[in-house]
Structure formats: structure tokens, C-alpha cells
Amino acid sequence: MNAATFSALAEPNRVNILELLRDFGELTVGEIAQRLGLRMPQSSKHLHVLANAGLVNVKADANRRIYSIRQESFEEMDQWFESFIREKEEQFNRFEELLIKKQATEKRNE
Amino acid sequence: MSRTNIVAEKGTQDVVISRIFNAPRELVFNTYTDPTTVPEWWGPKRYKTTVDKMDVKKGGIWRFIHRDGEGNEYAFNGVYHEVVSPERIINTFEVEGYPDFIGLVTINFEELSDGKTKFIEKTVYQSVEGRDGMIKAGMSEGAIELLDRLEELLDSIQNV
Image 1 (cartoon, rainbow over the protein chains, first blue to last red):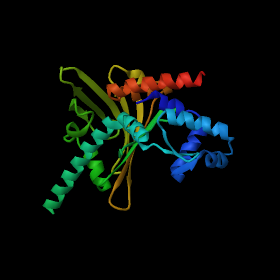
Image 2 (image 1 turned 120 degrees about the vertical axis):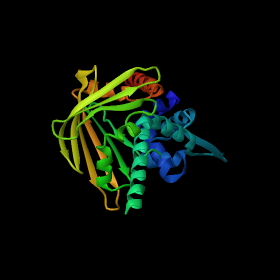
Image 3 (image 1 turned 90 degrees about the vertical axis):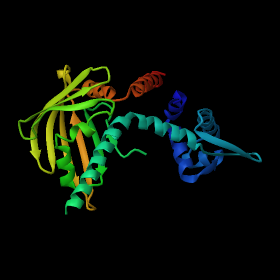
Image 4 (image 1 turned 180 degrees about the horizontal axis):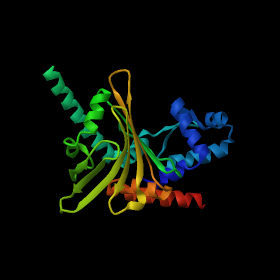
């Protein structure tokens, strides 16, 4: 897990940008600036940080730069968060197996 | 995606763990309170769990023991304060040797419309520090290290 990811996420405007990209898929710097009421240079700066942290992809289309979410980094974060609850999860999975076994036994005895 | 939901809001003393089981409420409750099945599911798999005491009624005592591969033992105990079959259990939770961090546990078994049951366990510790300590202790070693790193990182961000 890369700590830079969290430091990139620790700024509210950058979280807003990611949420916009999640909802719209792809947006240009201008569109992002407009929707969030930011100035263009400010948006560019934030997008630069997000790109460096591996959170967004950028592709060039003539002189426009189009941004989108880079899914891999979110999957990585998700796995990282999951690791915190794995043990509890494993315990409940075993409990559920037991419930399924019991249900099967009850059915046979009916 | 995990099916177990754990919420421990920053600065509070509680931890809420919930999960939906695909079984009717009575079965979930009966299985949960059956001492013969506890060794099969309670605690992390790497420990062998035995039930020393489990008297599921008001005033009854429970005590479970974990044994690891090297023969070390860790015991947990508590008292049942309320047992309402098949809806609710209220009990205390103590890791033996750490009586400063006793938790008060309320478990609700909610009946869902489609034969499923929502299990909701809320534990309130005596302090925020106690709660945070229990969370760290309950996690695998790697996760503790990561959590510490996250904590350091958040501190450094806040101090900028």
C-alpha cells in the first residue's frame, strides 16, 4: 500500500475530483474546473498530484488532456482496507458454514 | 468484497460489527449460543478454541481459551447480563490479564423478510484508547503495522 495515495486523498478538492470522474467516467481539466468552481491552474495542480499518486489516468487528445479514474489503485486500497477485517470475516464464514450444515441436517430430519 | 461490516468511528468508544447470515433467526441464535459448536468457529483459525464455561443465561459466565501452536494460552471471559432468545444477548467481554479494557457487548439478531438474519454486535469500551487498543489487538500482525503507518501518515498530514 502506497502512503502517497492517502496523502493525495487528504485534500477535499481532490476527493471531489475523483467523485466527479467516478460519476462521469472521463473529463477534461476545463470541465472539472467548471463543475467544481475551481480555477484551471488550481484544477491542473490537483490533477497532477492525483496522477502522480496513480489515482487517475491521463490521455492526450490533440491539445486537450482527458482524465479518468485509474481503477487499479482503488482495488489496491480496497484490498488494504479488507485486510483489517479479514480475521473477523473468516470467523463469520466458519459460523455460516455451520449454519448451512445445520440447515441441511434439519431438512433431512423432516 | 467483504460481507462483514466493521464500524469504529474515530473518537468514540464503540465498535459495531454486522453481517447478514443466510439462515433463519432462531437457527442463528441457537447456533451462536451452542457451546459444542464454539470451537468450530470462534476466534481466528490459527488458534484452537476450547470452551471452559458457557452458561447462556442472566448471571451466567462464559470463558473461552485459545491455544496457539507453541502451547501459549489466551483466555477470554465475561458475564451474560441479558439473554432474550432469539433476539438479543448482552454480555461483558474481557481479555484475561487486561481487566482495564472490559467491553459491554450487545448483540441483536434481526429477522429479515427473506429468511435471513442480520447479526449486529455493538461493543462499548470504557475509553477511546481501550477501544483502539482492542481493534489493533484483534487484527493480524501485518495489519497492525499498516495501521500504525497510517496513523503516522495522518499525523504528519495534520501537522503540515
